Image (tube, rainbow, N blue to C red):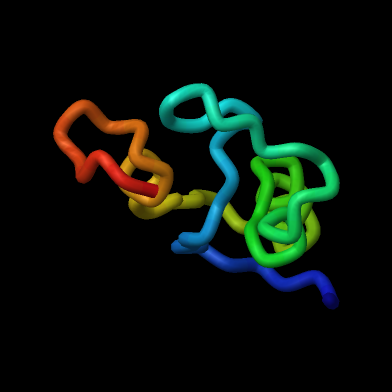
Length: 73
């Protein structure tokens, strides 16, 4: 990726933590880690591309962590 200045990055498909709903532990070797972005990866993209603001969408609902969301993952 080459450096660019960007105002905003809007990104979904993120990993919000290692412990998910109902105590499910997302282990380091879980295949989802190859498909989803960690906060560290998003921060690296932000810095490399000169992005001023990052909006991560549906963090809680993707993983069923919201008290208002669906009860299944």
